[in-house]
Length: 248
Ligand code: NAP
Image (cartoon, rainbow, N blue to C red; front, side, top):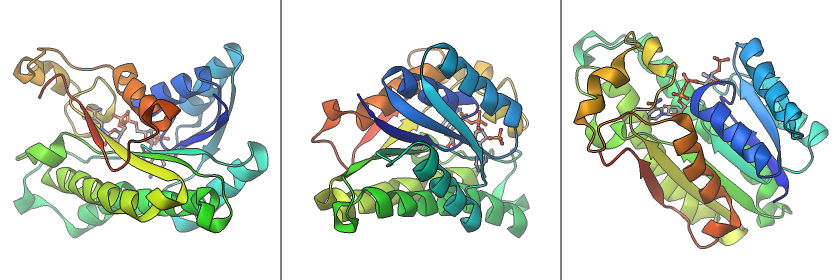
């Protein structure tokens, strides 16, 4: 498989697993990150050590000028984009809706929703046959929280993932006739740093018994679903969702 893959938030967790698996499938990979350069460079080094090709590019997906520069860097350093994984996402400290500030809501919407729209826009401008491109694929990271709502923890985060679901459905129909397949993956509770950023590093351990498979998931298990949706194996799949939740 050959092509150019951009993974937003590719320096840690699910994004890093996706970047590694993408490189081993033959993609030239751009690992985007926001601030932790060391983590991004470590993934680049791992890929290079396995004879793959990758670059790391700092950019905040919530900032339009950063997104423009990110995609221009991919054009210049890796060539025509064929695949985008809208993976960068944040959650904030667990709290109830009654205690959420406007600043918090704007931060989470900006990264999780606006960021995904801006990156998809730039990908479409490059991949759509209506824009002179060769087609491609986009995978958005939603969450099981879109279905469950995350009460008492982060309803704001869950609502951004509900927005990603609707975004996936609408965009998939909008660009399916232009050679671009858009799909989403909804992870359940996966062992990554994101739970610590919500204030509970041990969240997966606390909740794992509520999962029908009685365990948390690994980033690689999510990455495999993402890579399948990007691949030609999924050539007739658009506007679809894969739940990677252990049955939850
Ligand atoms: P994570 O371990 O917290 O890693 C987040 C990644 O996103 C890091 O590479 C981080 O880079 C980057 N990032 C954050 N804000 C960014 C921004 N504004 N611009 C660019 N990059 C940014 O996250 P994860 O658990 O792997 O989650 C990945 C995706 O899966 C997210 O969309 C998340 O909502 C979704 N998801 C995760 C779970 C789970 O249980 N882990 C479940 C359902 C859905 P820096 O380190 O440089 O900031």
